[in-house]
Image (cartoon, helix red, strand yellow):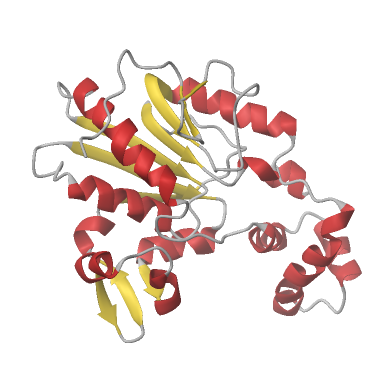
Amino acid sequence: MMQRRAGIVLTEKKSHLVENRLGPVMRRFGFKDTASLLAELRHGHEALVQAVIEAMTTNDSAFFRDRKTFDEFRDIVLPSLLVARASTKRLSIWCAACAAGQEAYSLAMLLDDRKLLAEGWTIDLYATDINGQMIARGEEGLYSQFEVQRGLPIRRLLTCFTQEGNSWRITPHLRRMVTFRKFNLLDSFGWLPDLDVVFCRNVLMYFDQKTRLSVIDRIADILAPDGALLVGPAESVAGVGVGFTPVENAPGLFYKARPVQLLRRAG
C-alpha cells in the first residue's frame, strides 16, 4: 500500500520501524494489534490509509539543512537566473517534500536578502508535502526552540522570527512568500507552472527505480530549459534523469541544460 500510494518501499529490515510508527495510529483508531490494523487497511479505510502514510513518511528537516546546497543556490543558481529573467522579473521555485516548511522558508530568507520584491520581482515559491499535518505546520510558521536552533544563526532568528512564549513564528512578509499545498509526488504535476528551480531533496532515496525515474522525468517536463534541480547530498539523477547535467564541484546540483555561462555571486 505504501509503495502504491506514496512510492515508498518498505523492506523486512524496516519491520521494527513500521511497528514503532504504527503505534500512535493504532491508539488513535483503537486497534489492539498490528494485525487488526492491517486487516482494516485492506478494506480501503481512507482516513486510516492517510494516517498510516503520514506516520510512515520521514519528516525530519531543519533550516538550511545541508548548508552547501543553499550556498549553491545562492552563489550559482540565483545569479544566473537573475540575469536570464531580467526582462520578466519572475522566478518560480518548487520545494517538493518540504516537511514543516523549513526548506522553503530558508529559500525565502535568501531571496529576501537580495531585496527582489522591493525591486519589482515576482517570486512564486511553492512548498508541498504528502503529509497534511506538516503542511499545516508550515502554513502556521511556528517552530519550537529546538527547531530554530538547528541551522539558524542568531541573526536570522532575531530578524526573521518573533518569539511567542517558548516558540518562534516566521515573520509575516516571509510567510507570504511561500504557498503551501498538500501534494503526492505520484500525482499529476499539471497544476504547477513552468519552473526555474526544483528542490527535491532527501525523498528520491525512498522510492524504487521506476518511481524515481517517473518523478525525475516529470520534473524535467515542467522545468525551464535552463532550470536547475537540487537533490540531497546522498542522491543523484546521473544515469536516471535523461538530459540533466551535473555542475562540477556542486554535489546535488543539476541543470536541465547547462546555461551558456554560470555566474557565481561575487565574494
